[in-house]
Length: 271
Image 1 (spheres, rainbow, N blue to C red):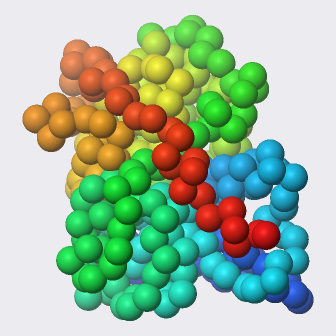
Image 2 (spheres, rainbow, N blue to C red; image 1 turned 180 degrees about the horizontal axis):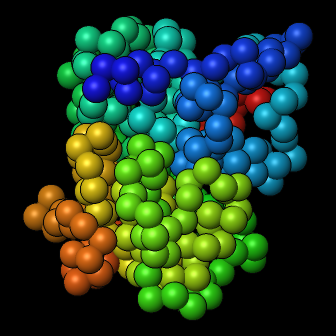
């Protein structure tokens, strides 16, 4: 367990070159071996696209350096002065690892993360939602549901290695982000232990169900997301196998207005 946790927390910073002028550094977690994990990589995809629609670039020179944490259960990696937009706490990480004393919080993934921060004295607006929910708005016309398969299963990075050989309809989270989305949108039902497999499906109106295949991931981030996108705790029923997930069908759908999350994006950092 502790080896897995150490690997999760270590990000190969040397893979991300620093720019020789003031800029906004977008932090996103990467596996230690340098692979690109779908959900974590969406932080860069969403941020770049949101900026591009405003005629701005993630790599442009700004008046004052800053660091932004967006998609991911990455608050344990925050440092004083960071800006938070849609990030969440990771329930499997010891709370003692959270060291930050001063953060600018613009939005968080859900109310559980909000309460985690408020208990520590942070001012947290009641603006919730994972920024991956904005993909349909940010990429209008690029992706559309084309149901061809009864279901697909999107494992999280850790569950990918424990799937039995021959498991059907699996979408690897190690593919390009666009390929993962395209394959998710081929399904009539999305089963996933990948949080962002669930989020992309629901953002496009496809029924989805969390399947808890292993104990590697703590339920905290899933509950945080569901509560932050309008569901009730009494509605949170998870499957323990792909077959059970197929029988249960999708969770209650989104009750989510994306505009407050869009409005909360700290665009001023690039002005």
